[in-house]
Length: 227
Image (cartoon, rainbow, N blue to C red; front, side, top):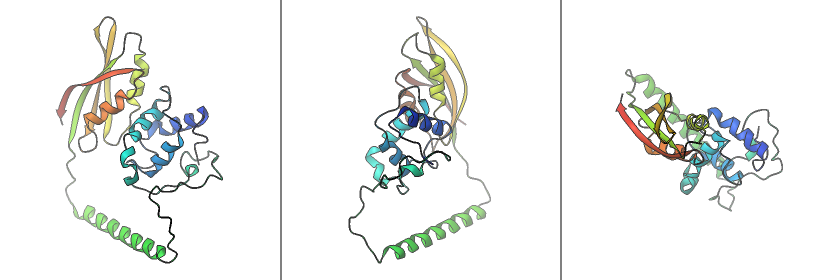
């Protein structure tokens, strides 16, 4: 596993391809895995690496609360696509920012066992509640129509739409789109999507879409309807 050297174009290309169908490095929520990979980058990926740039801007918004994100940090080479050579061999594992310098030689096994027991109990309780429930939970959804405006009539609207659709999140489904003239030869992208209300918000979509600043001037909500 691994991405290679994330400070090189080759490493960034691997990261961009890896994130083409993923929102995060692991799982469906931001975690310490995202922080490890984010910290390995020297800066924001270029606009042509739209998947990596979308992920970078999203994780950047969590910098103030990164220590509280779930998961345990692992060496960089343990993340990424299978089959890639780990070029980070010899690099020490990432040290947690709040890691205590004192090493407890006697209590760690007991603490790990308590955490494991607690985890098993929580999993069993969740499975029991899921089995006991007869009615599926009602998921609140909304249909949203977005207006995405470019900078000028020379903006590549095909690339702009590709960047917008590269945003993949749990609870977000993109729909139909069309180009609508706004004047002076400029056209805006009008694109529909369906979101789960408790997972995706319009403010979050605006932040992610306008992050493609090479193509996007602004984003507005043209229509919003509960489903």
